Length: 215
Image 1: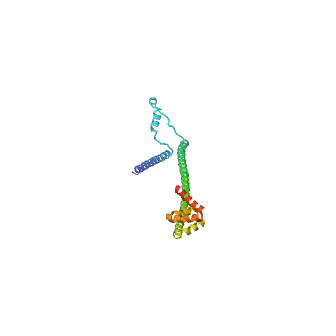
Image 2: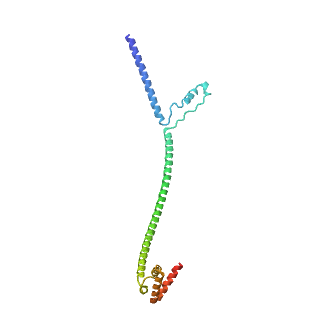
Image 3: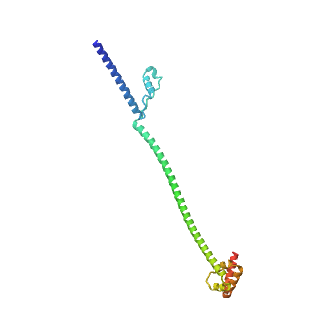
């Protein structure tokens, strides 16, 4: 009984060892298969070619079987091809980025030109507004002084004020503007008084008044 039992134990151990070795071989084969697939090699994908190579050796079947040997691409060549393809993709993307950068640069320059143009327009507008405001102030000041002069003339004896105006250095255009704002009778009396003191000045006033009417 002890020999038989020992034999069974030995057989069981041998079977266990064979199964373990088989499992290890299967595991290692799976490991190598996965590793080869990383290099673009697909194990067992050409099982038909392998079968055909075996049948090619049989005299009866050799003439009926078409077999082409498997062409194995070296890893370096495969790596270079993939590297070239990847480099082409990078070059294409770099060219695209360069084109986009050029467009952005052109757009930036256009915006700078527009900004400079707007700045020049704003400066010109500010200058014109300043000039316009100064002109308005001068007009307002002139109208105020002219209104004050009219009030003085109105409240003074036309004969006396005419002599004063004839001897003053008031510009003719101011005298014309002032007389035009007075009642016709008052303006006529003042102009007559000016003519008595300075006929040339009175003639110049009448001439300036006539020229202004033509305009």
